[in-house]
Image 1 (tube, one colour):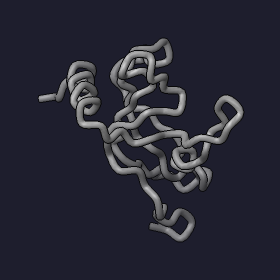
Image 2: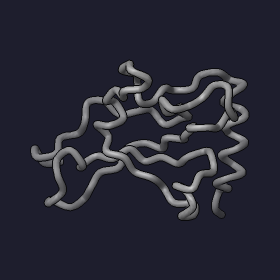
Image 3: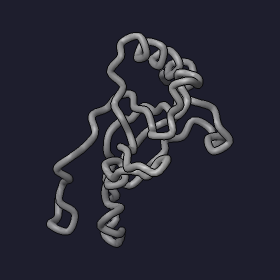
Image 4: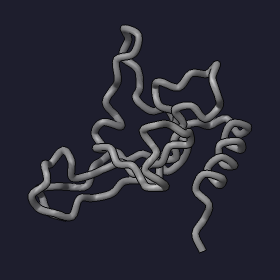
Length: 117
């Protein structure tokens, strides 16, 4: 790793997360994501803030995600930056730890993104 893009000290653990826009009164998978980990941009000419990207997939259908079963990327620094929501600063993503919720989301993930042979 070059000094230009040292490994980030903080990296999200793979797992299920809710985005701050998740509505607990809505479907269990609204604004739910599976985060696979962190990817590294391999070209030397990328902006330093874009050198590391969070790799994830949504667990809900939306117009935004009609491009097929691709992976989505977001600059890693955005994962940890708070978001403004309804006049307050809130975490952008929150790890889901409830076992019942995780069981449902695992099933949704398998249905949306079946393992490839």
